[in-house]
Amino acid sequence: MKPTRPAVLAALAVGLTVVTWLALQVAYESLPTLPWTMVPTLLLLGLGEAFTAYNLWRRIRHRPGTRPVEPLVVARMAALAKASAHAGAVIAGLFGGFALHVSSSLDKSVPRQDFFVSVGTLIASLVLIGAAMWLEYACRVPKDPDEDRRQGVSRA
View 1: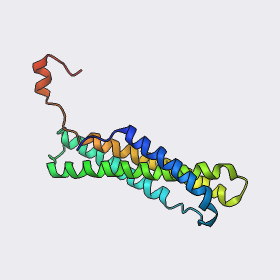
View 2: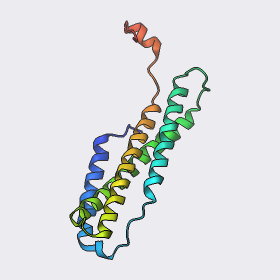
View 3: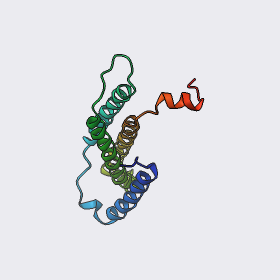
View 4: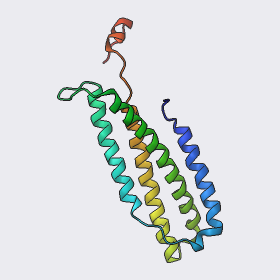
């Protein structure tokens, strides 16, 4: 499995923003208001992944007071991180399209509420993407410290 490339996530988010904005030109009036519940859900997922990334990073690097980690756990966390980053990009694209569409109608009550919910969800999905990228980075195996000494590189 290759590391997630930020350019792929950005392209996914931008592409879905455009598609959502175009779809809402036709269908916005028939949709119910956006639920605010995705904001805390995504923030909690991001917080959980950030906490997991920190703990896993410490365990993989054998910091004092930590237990070794099973390789299968690291593989599962890397897969979770990759999936979460892509899901966050999809959600960011969808709600970015919503925010873009309703930004021209902020004088009305319902579009204004949808705008704030979509911006909040967009920000929460960016938090999730950041935490997922950190978790994926934490799953990497560190370089062998003996290799640095053999090459004459000191870690200062």
